[in-house]
Length: 105
Image 1: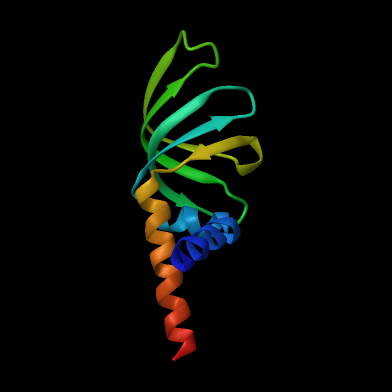
Image 2 (image 1 turned 180 degrees about the horizontal axis):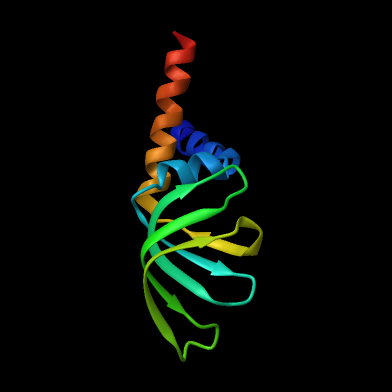
């Protein structure tokens, strides 16, 4: 039971930038404030959460139009939310646990 509570605590304090850095190379969905969505593989992100995606499918806010892009750049201040695969979140938590045990030793 302690382990579950510990994982929940870690998920609550997980930093978005460390999560995004771990997510590099993984698929993700990005919804912009204007409602457009971008599905692609994360190439890079910076400290302002500007991100580069590749192999991108862009969907208009009404869902009527689609574009396939080889790559795109999205400014961090235009992002409404990001959806990242669950296995990436698990990877970040595993790395945090390893770091904690290294620091304790």
